[in-house]
Length: 273
Ligand SMILES: [Mg+2]
Image 1 (cartoon, rainbow, N blue to C red):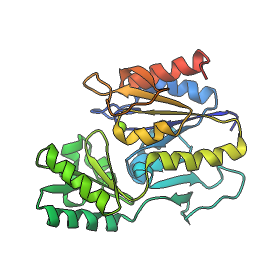
Image 2 (image 1 turned 120 degrees about the vertical axis):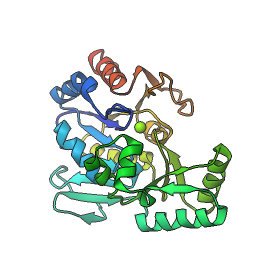
Image 3 (image 1 turned 180 degrees about the horizontal axis):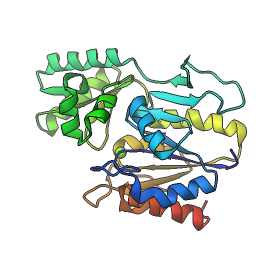
């Protein structure tokens, strides 16, 4: 690794188009990062299995962060020093910051029983239902079901009902965030915590490291707060998520992967870093 810049990126609605899940519009900027040796680290609410699918398509060999900061997956030979990790697989050293999925499903069940609200989690949905709701292929919806640290859910009633659910989640000592399509229940993890943990590892090789973060939704706020250069892309309706507010926030000017392309090229070519 030659670079002193690392880009942390959200997938859904950011590097991937909200509807088509294509990163086509960001290819010029992706090629630029590759030519400059800048690692692009995926930091998504998606599962390990889904991220691996897109890493293969992107030919990306960098570490990645799954399920809203629940797990950090670091290819075994990536860093040439020892560090603390929670478990090992054939390919990765895994730093776990999240709570076991089974516990999260139980918590959501308890809240459903207590409030009587119609809460529907991924664990209640079939593969075809997830495919339909997310506009995913069956293959990808199956990968989305292999969850480890985060339960996406919807509340069928109004906004007041989702507020009640949110309060109950907090009362029980868990966390709540919101992505492009779903609410998310997690343990005491978020994208920011995971980005800061991984940044510390990168800094052991490069103390002068500069970090870039790019996202589109509320669940990216912690990540954007944890980087030197935060970038926000527009939503499919052409607006920015108004809940993402930061003094040094760079607005990408366009939605999803088009915004990704424009902001990253501007940043790297105009030497704004
Ligand atoms: Mg997103």
